[in-house]
Length: 165
Image 1 (cartoon, rainbow, N blue to C red):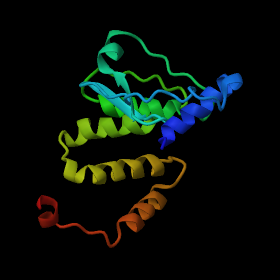
Image 2: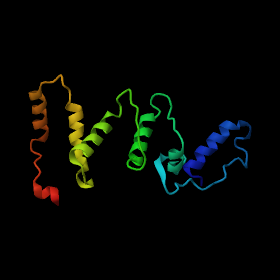
Image 3: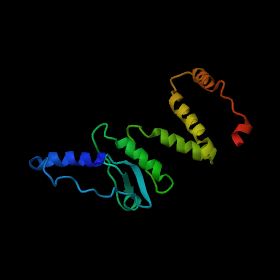
Image 4: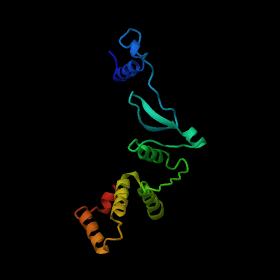
């Protein structure tokens, strides 16, 4: 019985060579699925199975261009690369559309305000900066923004004991 990946490959082969479709011997030869090497950046999974990765060594040694049609996943790919390489390589993002502004605000806050964060409370830091980013509209009166903040935290008290355990 063929795997789903083998079935997909057989369909692709049949489209590419319609004159040989349905004839014996056209079935794809099973092969090992690709594997990530040590140091590779894991970007996701291939449709045919197996991981999709990018060599960190090749990324550092050269340049990279990410291009594609609208909705193709360019921003998702760049976010994934930024997340996976944070602290390992120097990152410079030129973002004329402001799509990655949240990362800059979070990084400035974590490094410039808190100086240290723990995995345990990282979600809280991210929530705080998401709130700041979403509620930072200077066209809204300060009291209106403060009211929004109080409404958001009401009933969500955390004690010092909860923080340290």
